[in-house]
Length: 67
Image 1 (cartoon, rainbow, N blue to C red):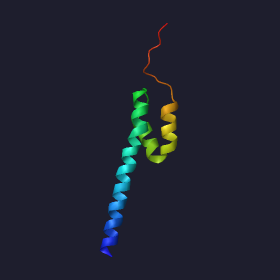
Image 2 (cartoon, rainbow, N blue to C red):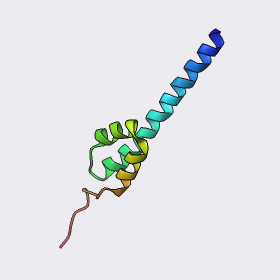
Image 3 (cartoon, rainbow, N blue to C red):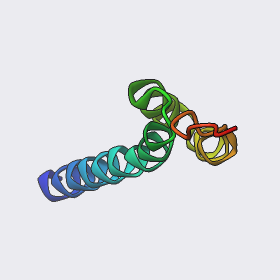
């Protein structure tokens, strides 16, 4: 019984680590574009597909406009 519990615990921890690591992807993309890293990180923890789409779709705030 202990072996099943230990295996399940390791699986849950591994899933959580991968989930958190993936959440950094849209946060880094949005952060490079001048948007809130933390906001996109939290959004991607809750709803990853929406966060990744939004991160690539938002405008780049770091570009300078030349006339």
